[in-house]
Image 1 (cartoon, each protein chain N blue to C red):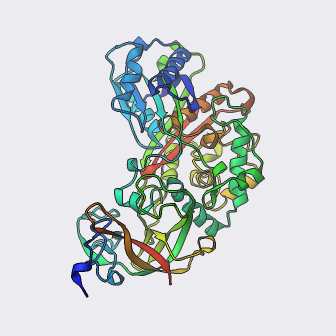
Image 2: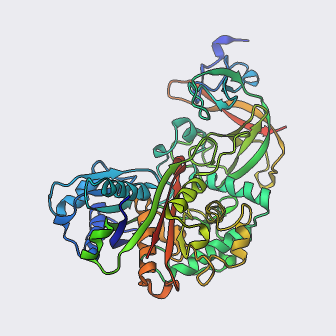
Image 3: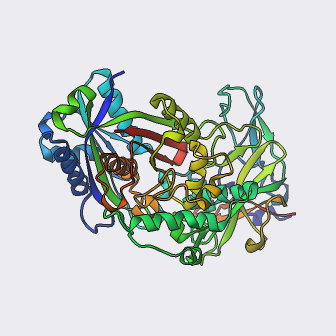
Length: 381
Length: 145
């Protein structure tokens, strides 16, 4: 299989930008990535654009003004995993020989507050009030606390870590440190999850330029290699998540993060112990604890202790969400995974400034969302 | 009973309730069971989500179960929620029924600040709202035993 390199990355800050249209937000990230790769738009052979809440053919509307070169531009949607799926489609296309390079862009512009429930739920679920996304995360957290003794304090510590990290990330929406007490005293959204432990839907974009390993050196002396990029959707009763109406008491399939993680590690020929840095889904702080366990950073039930031991802080054995994570960056759904890739690429290049993790050689990015859509990407120097 | 005074009743979802809707105490939840692997689902399913076979039978779900997990909805859910206005915080949870299914349901008639996993709950079918055609739209909740 052809090896794929990332030769350029770009980002548009995550946040809220008033009337600025998604087309401009996306185009800015794309232009930065093209410049970073030192490749001209006219030389790009295909583009994949991840988004969830945007109009028809958003990708072409964003990118055609760069020049109507006639290349295929495909919009990709897989809820919170959209960016990972777009990246994977581009990789498959290059590996197939259909094209030698591709631009992958994730972009979103969302309204403040809860997401439009009709995108995710059946009408009866909305009428009955079963359409609050964080309630699903909260019920998983409550069950984990019951089974393993995970505490409110451990969940708050994840949010504390990510808020602390965000101070050094100029691309994050919130760049402010909070005390544990402030986090635990912030309004309860869905028990046991507090406002400062949850991410906000927002706006932003991130882009990467890919090509074959052989061609990468034509453009850059600092290519980052894609070791693996996996997408999966939860098997039956493997995961309780929006918009599930039930779970089985008998079937206990491995969760999508576990499935995608194992496959990504196998394809990369490494294990969780080889990861130097990870950016993972922290739409709520508990989710990050669950992901530690499902990716194999620790045993099931030990995620809370991993936090207590500081393993995932900057300076710990596996720093997680040094960007501040989605809790601080916000979650522009289509852009979130590519924003993670942007962060990992900077870290692997040693260009992450004040939040640089030392000796960073292998990084992992993970997203999971509605319908059990999950993507895991592993990158290396 | 004066039938003329009874409003027409319909389900919030048309495949999950036994009929008639009068009296509501006798209404039960319907499910589907796979004749191949035995997995159980809410409402009518033509294929089994577990084994993908198309060999399903209709069953009536038990009306009592245990709370498996829960949360409290502190803000009005987004969209056309038909609960009380002004909004009243409410609990929702997964109720484990004897048929091997954990069903997501609003919880009612309880102190939301003192919920406990493992407690016993029972089905309550009642009116969610009256639609523009004058129909009483019925939904389900669970209340403490």
